[in-house]
Figure 1: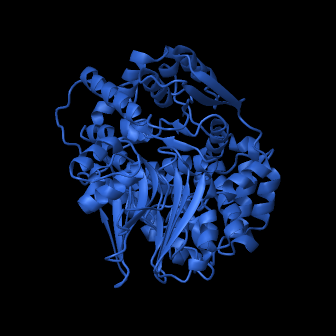
Figure 2: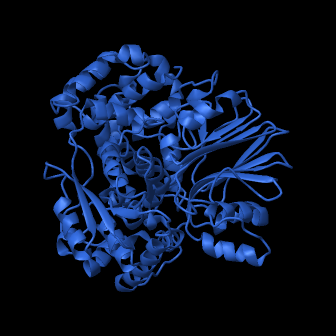
Length: 613
């Protein structure tokens, strides 16, 4: 994996080297820049393919086009053959040059041909135009700003190094973070910086300063009304996943796999073994708490496939490691699994440079019970309507809000931690001072999520909820977690579940194929029954996280006491008294530990980066 940087006619050129240095762990093998008239392109490289020839920034032979690229293209060899047949002569064996020459040949049309994870930018010297793009589901990140010229980087961190750049906190992103524990694209935590959404490209024309952003791929609605039966579909996905894994084994450096002991990661190991990956190295974490530990199931899979298995005991995540991990985030992310994923990545990187992961299995194949919690399950009735009327008149407390909601409103209420519910236990207003409450525009909290969920037929059923998760929970939480945790230790993580062919096939299917009386993930459970030990698939689903209450009353207590105690100085826009009460309650199980962790992450991050509020 790599980090990229582009500056076009900005006053930040002197800070280019310092900004590129913030991407060092994303690309520790080399850091290079080219300076063209009014333009700086920078690249921090983690060498994986064509170690000798894949140096970036990379130019076409005539010098007109220059690319900086972060990611991997798995079908680059077939594209190379197609381009060679059209007369292109290649100077390297890298996938980077295939993107570059593909752009010369097809312009933006190259995006529809790429199967991989990517974020890249191409500068056209003659037209003085930058073209940049991001993969379908946002596996790789990309941030940009049109503040005083144009700036682009892999993460938000470089923008803090631009001397004089207006690092102003975006209150609407703060709102979304407190609602969803992450920031939803296209926003970022800085008001002047945007995230390029998944499946999008942008162009910036320097002479006119014209910026445009467009989608090149959209999440499709289900196309099949009468899909094949489970057995036939299982055979289809058996072949598709095998092909996806095989294509993602291309590498000139050692690779392995995360192996949690769950169905998704275990299937990845099965397909790696079937593709002849040798040596097959696997990595898992062992927890002392039974409700978190899956290590014995991982070891059973490792034995079945004869892998070179590595197990790390869940580390003693003391205050120093907590502060290091949160401080390394370019913008806040309050998924506790980020901490454990970072530690697993640390172990994995000691043996390999690339690892495969089962990310995406739950979102694509119906792995969450919430996908069955649809609006039809919650019809409105006279009693709920009466509750709403009485609360509106002030005759009943707002704490009854949840009981009064129905249909879409109840679904949305359940899907966030804090929101525009002024008197309920999920009231965002409780934790903000009045000016901040108004600045965050609370009435728009659910707007983007609602619009996305309703884009597939106008109702919130299992299919629309699963699709909405792809560009929200998957892209902005799960994939961000894996990207930042792995890149912190210069580890590239690939996600075969999200290969183009798998995505295309699964999204053509109606949601009901993924559920039966036993729950979701029917197709992956069927594959697991075909290939994996019974103890892997015949058991309840486990999460991969940390026991927050244990840490709040142990290793992290002093850190929490310090940061919540200094919240008035760190974040004067937050209600100090409400935060103090939340922290006290979280330590005694009387309040939401997840919400307390969300604010702890926020306070640690704000204390480090100090954006203007």
